[in-house]
Length: 576
Image (tube, rainbow, N blue to C red; front, side):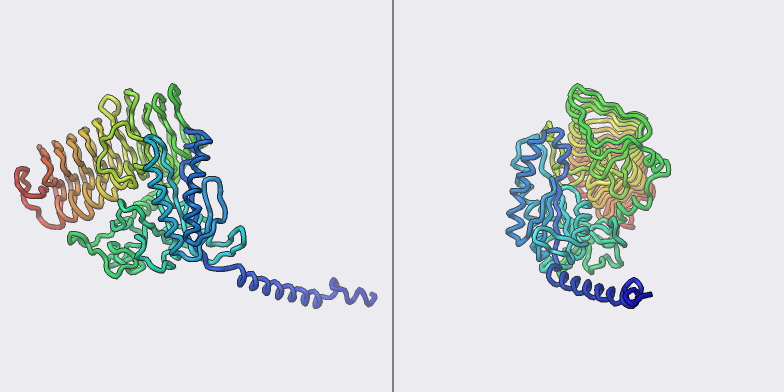
């Protein structure tokens, strides 16, 4: 072998090793240089215009393009004013970054408030422009026209977790705020993020003055001994404040189970999971227009956006199983008929919206022997304009009707019989929310439905509906009416059973009446409880309930015997 060949790198392992060492050293030097020059702590913000696909279908491409332009015209100056940098637009979404978390959250809040003002100024009947926002703080690589890094990926995950009109921020963003008193923030849940190990804390920024951030959080990491969460502040205390508001009305803190965590633990039945796995019918978006009829039947449908039934259209669903994406459901101002059908969520943790019935055709909308599982309600501000202006005490940012939302319906236009509402939740009306309606609900079951405010199973507002032969089991509400709540209403509640229903912080474990005249006849209240008063039934001074042949068994108001209940007494509250 000649000398040249003996000394070649291919034949001399030592020489190749030396070259590799030099390359590795050069790589390490370059990485350090890139890190010093381009990497910095940033707060990343993603925004997403919700419902644009359905809006384009209903109002046309030109309308959606004009709305996206309006979206940009409002957002871009806000980003600049708060020392942010717009990186890119992505169809109906945006990506930007800020050097300070305080500026990023300030921009998000300002943007949501600007959108609210814009929506209030839109003509009646026009779909509002609703945006969800997610923020995360971390190390990122900042180039002239783009940003990279895990901080960007996590911010995108938080944006996808948020609902319309919501701002979700990560724990690192929350901890990076220089002045937390400027914002109302609350730890709302812990969750897993796609592609990320462990669980992550999710904070919500409450920007709308009409929405309270002081209500107890929905369980999760906030449920710690002594009513303190992992950050050491009480669930009744605004983060960054030295003192909380304290347990209101002297009510001790009672950690509530997380609706989302409980749904995750329970999950779908094995039959539901098997059906979902076999489902082959995909509906991206669907609008049933005037004069059209659309029928669904069979084993499984996956629905990714709202099914919209316009006035004059007819949607019939029979003997089917329908699974909805997180922001999907059914919105009907036409005619909707359903029988022996399961309405559930693709992901029970994220849930789905609900079925909205606002009948304007005068035709009957029968809903029979159907099951509604894991619904989470719909924001009032996202609904089509109502045909009547009788809606009172509505918070546009609240979610209403976990399984079913009914408005402006009559006994001639809607009936609900033999249905089951299972583990549905909302701010008001965990199972059903009834407003300005007079309908019949018969032999239906409300199983472990929850409300973050009132009416765990059913909430009646300005209604005179009839509930006959219904069962409420394990339903709960934070403030009033674990099983049922009625405000400014005169419902007939006949031969119904309320069992183990709970009002966690205030009144009326079974039923709460506010400025109403309910008739409660032949009912049973079994082992219901309230934190303050009215383990079985509570009515305020403005109510005149009629209670006939009704049994109350082991109902507990705050662990003590309640005073004798007298409908004619002058007491401010009357309870059993």
